[in-house]
Length: 121
Ligand code: FES
Image 1 (cartoon, protein in one colour):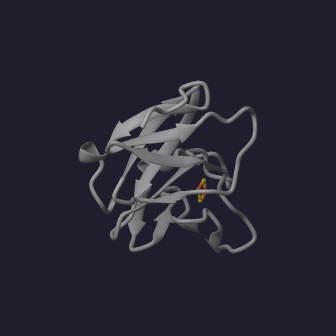
Image 2 (image 1 turned 90 degrees about the vertical axis):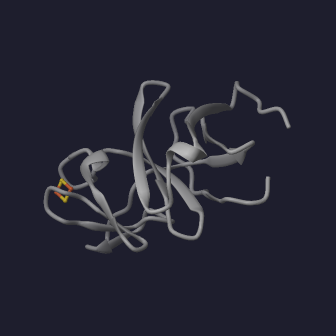
């Protein structure tokens, strides 16, 4: 029930992030995006595009792909893996859903490869 706020930061209420949308958030001074895919999967990534650093907060979703607005690089919006090109990836942050709130794992300076699908709580 309770969330360890030494490890997790409240990012956004689920009711404010509809399926098919992404939202910029700041966690511990880092600019991130939280992505809510159709079907309920939620992921969080550093917002800086690995190509030239454009903010992915201005990007958009095409089904399960996240597209950078600058030069249209595409990423798997679940894993962050590059789709086009495929030799890159986004830095992912841990996600936890608790009481209809999206919590983001504090980075401790490292990206991690884990994300979450919304469950019944
Ligand atoms: S900066 Fe994102 S594709 Fe170029």
